[in-house]
Each structure stands twice: as structure tokens, then as C-alpha cells.
Image (cartoon, rainbow, N blue to C red):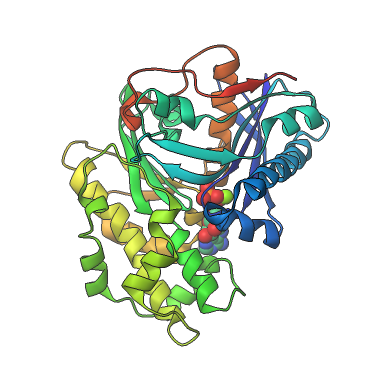
Length: 360
Ligand SMILES: Nc1ncnc2c1ncn2[C@@H]1O[C@H](COP(=O)(O)OP(=O)(O)O)[C@@H](O)[C@H]1O
Ligand SMILES: [Mg+2]
């Protein structure tokens, strides 16, 4: 059966839409990212400060944009189900009670596409005592569980890793910042002209402050053993300003070099602490937008030696498609009443069917 997956991650760069063949064999047939209009992106990034009427409106508006993305990727084909992650505007796994909020009203997507929509996956995992994140490990286990041991590293706004193979998923957790600090610094240092350090061009010209990186890696989050999950707000403007000072045209390259190193080193460090001593992994496969940054990839390769690091561009699953594909897969399981969470990764009390179903 055909399923669509819709995802906008913490980068808030836009909606990644995937059309996939699901079932025993999972195959991505098409993948495209529909960029957010700049004004929408700005509101999403500052959504934590919006008031209820504005949040409510943004929810319906994003529903419309997600519906457009679904229709765009469907191209007139008949689809059984759409899995929509929505846009996280708040994630508070350590609050009392733990809470999380994803926007992009699924009723709008169902109404506009005429397809059953499964959305809002995280709250059920939290209600069952989990962190509501990361969700991808269940899909990693499905894709890679039967092969040799591998680390599957996604680098979106936040970085997260799963270790899967030899019959199961072994561990999974957020490694720290993904692209979020680099994106923010690129924007702040260019007066909003750049939304990312494309191909690591700025970082390649700068000089990293290695001592600062060593110091920053001593922060509690990095030392805490899994399970653990993060929100972009943990690595936001306040973090940047307090640890790296003012960012201007003059120092933006050096700051990006430092943040690119911090990102790579936080991943490598977490492997040395929590993965390599316990698991003999054969390689690391990198997915998500960070896999498109050659400076970041080079640093990661250096720091993880002798473990090989490759971009996770598989025939059935391009690196940029994996997160969105995960929600197509989760939705297909949800409509059949089959569990789709990963209790080992989130700390939930057990297997659960995540997602709320809006009928076609
Ligand atoms: N060519 C590139 N060079 C550097 N960074 C890139 C490139 N392409 C994408 N990215 C990074 O990837 C991010 C988007 O990655 P994505 O996997 O969609 O993350 P998320 O799941 O958080 O939306 C962008 O914000 C940007 O930082
Ligand atoms: Mg994205």
C-alpha cells in the first residue's frame, strides 16, 4: 500500500514529504522538501512566545501547508494513509507533567486530501511514561535490525542516534545539537541573510576554538546517560549568546567553525561514552540535512576513526527522506493497530500505538 509521511523538524526549514510503498519491504518512491515561507518560519521559530489565539491560528495554517505538501507528493496517486509529525513548537519531557506540542491540524490535511491521517504521535508515548522522543528508533530497528550492528545517526535540528542490528535495537538517544546552532549563528551573523551555512562554506574559512568546545562538552546534558531527549530551545539564542558572545560579520566564520566542531565532537563524544564501549558497530550511517554539510561530515569522520562514516543514501531510502519516511511507516502501523513506539529509546512503560487517527 502507498503511504505519505510529512515531517518538519526542529530546523523548521520546511515540510519534507515522502511517498512510500509500505509493507514487508519499505521503499521511498518520491521525496521533496516544501520550504516554509520565511514569515511562517519566523513564527514557527518564535512559537514558544506566542499567545493562545496565535498558536491556534498557526495550527490551522500549518495544517494547510502540510496538506499542500501531501497533495504535491501524491501527484494524484491513491494513498491509503498519511502520517504527519507536524511541527514541534514545544517539547518538555522533563517538566511535571511531561508535555509536548506539535502543530499542523490533521483535520485540515484529511479534509483537503480525502485520505486518513495519523498525527500527534508523541503525547501517547509521554502518557506512558516516555520522553516522547526519539521516535525514529522503531523505524531504524525495522530497517536495520536484521543486519550487522550499525549506528544510525540523524542530523536534523537536533542530532540523534540509534544502534541497531543483530536482531534488535540496542540503544537510541539525542546526541546534542544537530544543525540548530549552526543555522542560528549563520542567521545572526549575516543579519538574517543566510538560514544555514550552506555546504559549510563559512565554517571552512574560520578557525575553531577547540578549548571552548572541550569546555562546552562538559555540560550536564552531554554527560547524562541515555535515555535522553532535547528540544531546539535547549540550544537556542540564549545558549549561543552566553557561550559564544556576540556574533557579527567579523567573527561569523570562526563561530561557525567552532559550532561545526562542537556538533561533530558532541556526536563522537557520545559514541565514545555510551556506544563504543558496549557495541562493536561496523559503521555509522548519517541521514538528515547535516549529511549535506561536507565540513561537518569530514570532522565526524576524523573524530570517529576507525569507525567508517557514510551518508545513508540507500537505494530505497535517500538520506534526506528518512525522518519523513518514518512517519509514513508509523502511520501504516497505527491504522492496523500495531505498536510503533520504541520503549527502549523513550523510556515508555511498553509498546504503544502512537498517533491520533482522523478518518478520510
Ligand atoms: N547543503 C547543505 N549544507 C549545509 N547544511 C545543510 C545543507 N542542506 C541542509 N542542511 C542543513 O539541514 C537542515 C535541515 O535538515 P533536516 O534533516 O530537514 O532537519 P529537521 O528534521 O530538523 O527539519 C537545514 O536547516 C541545514 O542546517
Ligand atoms: Mg527539515
